[in-house]
Length: 480
Image 1 (cartoon, helix red, strand yellow):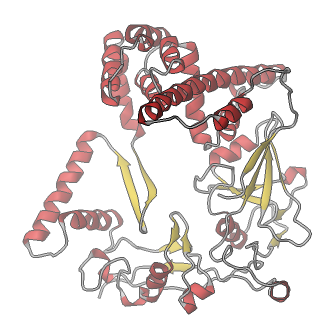
Image 2 (cartoon, helix red, strand yellow):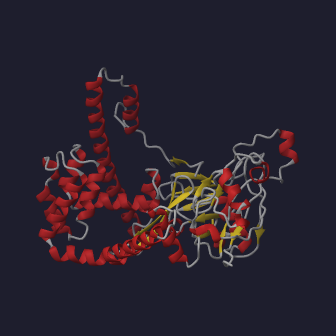
């Protein structure tokens, strides 16, 4: 997401004259001369690494102090105990330019180090462990009671140099062994509980590919892999020209979806400009759930959809997608030239209607909270409905479930920012945290927006004639 700014502090606290501040440290580092010679470069690289570790430890201490301060404020305000501390991790995430999920993990790490693992925190402060390796120690002792975790921390004594030269695996093994010696029952129960955390996730890969990842119990995962391997070997023996990896992947798709090629009655909202579709322009398209895709690939997906060919496969190559044929239609939306701002669609309904929902999802793409790129799960009234907010595209934002809940906690507020006099900006909102810091989020540009630089006359004439948004429903036709 672009256009994220901040934080803008609600107030400024001045440091005493002559005091060294974090900002002044950054200026000092920027003004240091470069080391002279290879040996000096390595020496300073090590010193900078030690400094990074010390700063990470300081951030951890600040996170715990901030959490405690917020909880005291919540208690004084009469907030129930189970709700105290809500939104703390999200504020830390914004300050560190991280996603809310990452902010929660950082706060958990900080609490464990500060309250239960002082040796590990000391090793982080002195550069004997970096933040990631401290995270490994915290993670592997998470199943223990606070007392047992502190005992393991003292046994391992990371601040005594016990992990000098050790790799990540060695650190994990040492922590697991110490945890098991301290409380074998909890470690065993943790392994049993891991079965409840099985899940499937999807994340983009380069070149219009994706990683479909499953976290499974070991027996199930080994059995699946063996079945796919046997099927691939059988097809290879029968003369199938695909590689073993391709056959295993195609078999997984077919057996999971029940259809050759895996496409069965789904809808894909491919966002593409009219120039890319009809004039062979090179402006990339956008595929929801994946991201930016090459212009040629998008055209091939649409132009070859009726022929049953897979645009991602070389001509003449056999594959599971060869029987798929799709039904495709256009759904047009318009944006203001030069800004990419979608034309408004208003509604008096309390709930966003289906057409407006698609409109907002096409505009926002992912969660609009700064640094969060999770999928949109909720359509939120920026100014709440009960506070006079309207069900319009300008007062709407796509949010993930966690960010929507965080926004509703005490002290948080959001508002759409006023449009500039000439309207030359995409949809922007301002998020304000309980400490008074503000962050801005601007809707990402649609394909073709940044490339356009029309003249004022052209912009005036075409203000309501912008882009073409391709809505494609790809429904597999039954094989003959």
